Image (cartoon, rainbow, N blue to C red; front, side):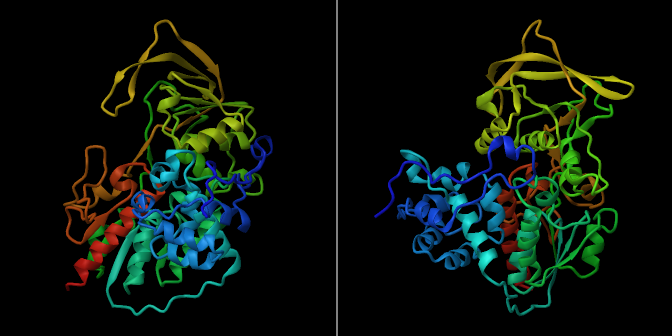
Length: 462
């Protein structure tokens, strides 16, 4: 009999006033008993709407039914037919807007905890099974992948399964892209990312780090070296700023710089690691997306007493995941909504305060959200020594500047055929944030899968 509880099985987690002082994972994950209990909430629907909501097409009801029976390894094998990074997706995917958003249990009550079950299955496999390198017959054809984030890793893995010799070129010194530099340790442990990447390496994929395509070599040079297909998954790492006075002061960070210092360069372990990250008593984070939540919660853990999310719209317009907003509030992050910065003030070259105005919501804009307008005579000042700007990112211009024939959007995103991820340049494909702008891990993975399928179809005809 299905478990007809209207609520998900609660996931154990650290107490808010404990976890906001450490970088250990916030939630502990399900036990075997909790996973089975949650899995029995699935009705195994005939039309499988949850699967339709998954960008990579995981057979969700099938893996959940195996969890119901306690067949956790079988569940893992089902998931990884379509998703090579289940431990990552189970932690950072916005399931509420995808698979869980389609779940019929959500009509009356909470959806099945699909993400929590995926995480449990992946963790169970990692802790209880020995991975063996699959025997894959090579087809002699070479493909290059630029960027080792979720889009690049997924594309590489899918092509490796089909026998291609795949080399991934990564600009930074560690593999993983945004998974290692952009998501905090307390949400996504780095050793877990390394283990997921190892499964891709076990398929024969080669990784070359410290290679900046557009500087170290160009797309055309890779084609001349014999790569028959190229996938660009280099992400969106170029920060945007508001262009207000004072953004060049010391103490102003772009969110991706701040998170890179802390995550990839282990700034949270200073002085053990020589990567100082200075945060003041009061920290202001401009923006309210997932990256802003990550930056704010990180600043709190680094010792800031008061961390403010400064956002020009209201509660309903916050773009971050509900879970991230909930955790941030629990941890003491202060939300200054309907507030817009106008100037950053400084003393002796360092941030000292931020001038703001209050906003009110007017008519909807082109995005459908109500447009914020300035409230008259509402100026005020927040005392702060650290400002973190998190209002979006765009692709680094290096690749488009050094690749003749590659069509891009006015804001820098590469233009592709959405059905194949093919670019305007022959044999070159692209996907993830370099096409869409900053989005989600799972959408990038979906683009990587689509591109791999198209590359294989193209090269198989040769």
